[in-house]
Length: 218
Image (cartoon, rainbow, N blue to C red):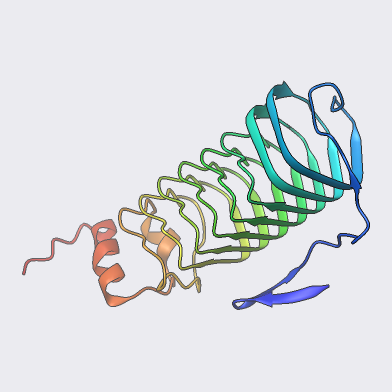
């Protein structure tokens, strides 16, 4: 199913109404495991590491991930609702048709991940890492992304709406035609060529004028 979120069309997760409850624990999730058509809820996964795990057509509700690493993970048709994914390591993962709804993603590591048709809504994601990620049709709406790092990521049809991006690092990303007028971008790190053609408010333009070395005197 396709849904238009803000100005970008994203494919929603295809999740069945008939899901089997899956007890996520250290004992039943290991390298290369594949979990599908599952409902995972009201649980804690702590101090665990597994590589190349696949989650497909899975709904996570009220799940806490503490000190968890899922490198090279495959997430497809997945929704996280009211989950705590703080500091979860998803380096070099494949994330397709996924929604993060009202989740805590402080310090989440999505560096080098391939991210397609993904929505982050009402998420607290300070210090999140997206370095070298490949993002296409990705929406951030009503999120806290202060001090997050997107350096050298590839953006195609990415949108930030009503999101706090204070001191986000955006070096090496072409931001042309991206509309930041509803966001807080004070202290955003970028180069002159990165912000060329970006859509900003007059106040934001004054903030970004520091990239030109201009001193504005009142």
